Image (cartoon, rainbow, N blue to C red; front, side):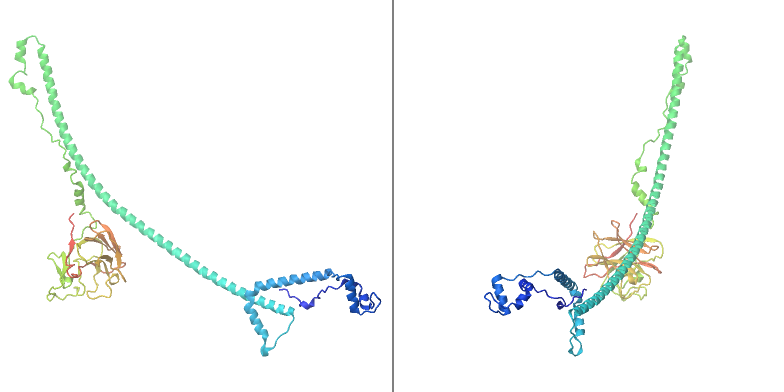
Length: 477
């Protein structure tokens, strides 16, 4: 900041009358007019102005012009500096003024140069303070952004790991699918080889019989040709009576030697039904003992059924009866006494198992698997957190019974038969539309250290709209 001197420190340039400057003595000492009378100095000057016209103004000296230019430049610089620092120094200037306003109301009287010096000092201090604050804010912003970068890198790393895990999982699934189809191909190839071998044996058998028949016919043909040759030779003899007497082919007992006896006929009809027919269905039937998992034979366990549930004699159908007499129900710790549920008759701890349940036109149902130690009474939650993995029809919608809220499942067609697939090794239970075998939903059960039972709940009658039974469907292959 440039400290400007007080405006009175520079001399003011005042133009003078050139006539009076050039003739100072005359102006001061001249006392006589044109007629010789004595004049006062003022009258003498007025008389000269009247006769000589207006006075000439003197041009400023070079030093005075330079000083004036410097003053103007300094003033311009000061004005620009004040405009640039006005916003940042306003509060600091007010504080400085208050401080210099002093106790006791004393006022400081300083020159313009001192005032500008104080202002420049305060402006510099405020600028340094603001610069320091700005730097601190920038440092904090950099730290915050670095923290965001670290979080971004960590999220990127976790996503990469997750992506690699997903790829590995799909690679495993791809190998499993290929393995299953390789097994199917192997089975079909074996069946194909068996059928082709049987076909080849039948072909060789018929061809061999035909070849033997062909040989027999050829042998008789050679015998007949020999007989013809003998007879032709006899015709050339001259003694005809002798020929008649000696020809063995003309006597009745020897005529059988020259007759053709066809060999036994060979059955040459190729019957496609023996080798083709319903070949696909036949192979499908053969696959029943080879399929894994095969269809699990399933029934309901009456010892676990809620007292208001009724079972068929075969224990393959269950339905709800609101007015059922429950006094005869024997107390059983395995029986459900709060929810209208029933277990299947067998539990699973290893392997893969598949069964189907027909729901028909029921408006509400619930199917799945449950831990063997699931509570038989009222539960705080009836989803996966309680050890029950089920899918249900409720209010016209199909839902997966997850916790804390059920998950809605979108199905393209109404479900009339449900297929359930339990994989104990992978700890998964999957649901299928058993008519189209399209997948519906899959639960991951994580670690299960107890046996799992098939779980069924036909639900209440819903004022007569849900009286149909749940039926275990055993497909015949």
